[in-house]
Length: 199
Image (cartoon, rainbow, N blue to C red; front, side, top):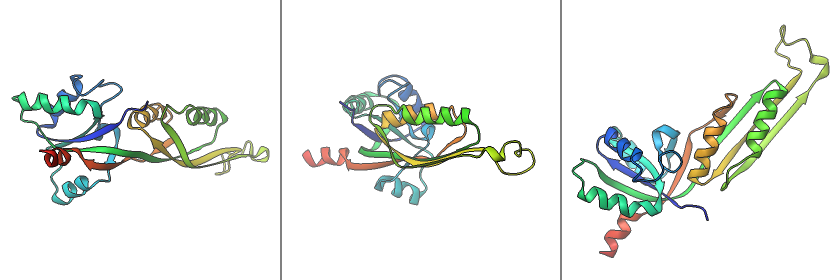
């Protein structure tokens, strides 16, 4: 079963939030906890819009964690002397990002195809388009003109779970010819507002 995620907006020192993220209390810091600024994440929810309009981003850190960790994090912060508080916590409905590539060697093309074939659990390609051109007549002209005897170009959208996209992005970063846009996070209901309604 795929792990549901939440995005927490922490208010307080980014260094203190990072220490919390690296402590293991939010989940495995190597494979489960994602600080938005590290992973190249942009938000698409209401809270992101409000914070950007108000220009109050310096002391706010967005962190994505497994949803099951949220109650424990809230309990810890309630007892902690750290000057960190949770400003918002939203369920993550979807994560995705666009990518493109262009290469001129079969070796790089093979590596890119392998990366695209070996998608982690919960990750899929959408709107994928690729074109290969192998022109024997152009061989030997590369030094003198923009013509290449081999070209492999493509673009697409990667969608899936937070954990899966984070894992795939780390793999794809090893191939510099793959250009990736920031990860877009689509947020759902405000879990803190739900708690307030229940009380």
